[in-house]
Length: 225
Image 1 (cartoon, one colour):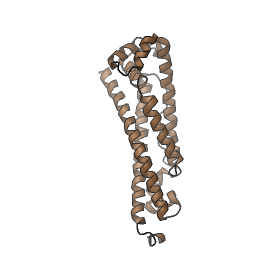
Image 2 (cartoon, helix red, strand yellow):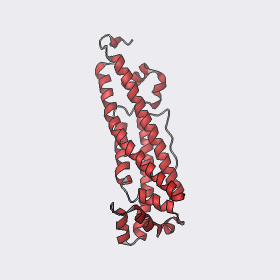
Image 3 (cartoon, helix red, strand yellow):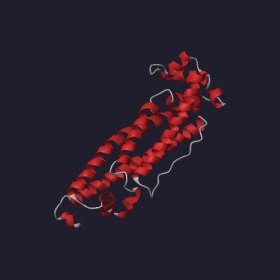
Image 4 (cartoon, rainbow, N blue to C red):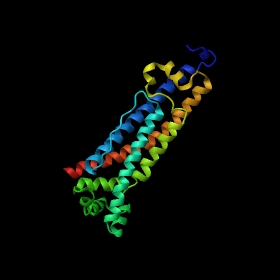
């Protein structure tokens, strides 16, 4: 038992809570790496992108891993912006506006993109058109990805950012030392509050991100059948 536990008998429970929340945060990070690689695979396969896959840095900090995902998302957004600009250039203004219209049927949007996708990519596939519609003619890049990037940046800039992702294997006391440097009631409470606050935002943004990517991959599977 740590010496400060005699002064703060609730500390052992708080240590366990910090440990649990740390694992939840790492699980969310891992899921975001996986989802981002799925999206990269779809873009490389169907839109001719050459984006590298990303890996979680096991010996890095939470901030370093957040930054890896953020950079990958920025690269994804650049590629989608290129496709968007090409569509705007090749399509008549009225047709391009239809792509931005949320009331327009998705099948109609795919048909519109199909008219020019071969000129943009050098080949014409319904899967490529569907991916373009799902990712360019939607709020995935402007809303969902931007939100997740914002949350990841906030986590990286918080007191959690400097924590190593590998501290879980060191045992609970080592985790607490890595996080706080010392075990005090107020510090543990602050760590718990920080984890809880960022986890709520991270989980919400991450779930929307994963759902959007699942929609894209399911649409692709339907198109290639």
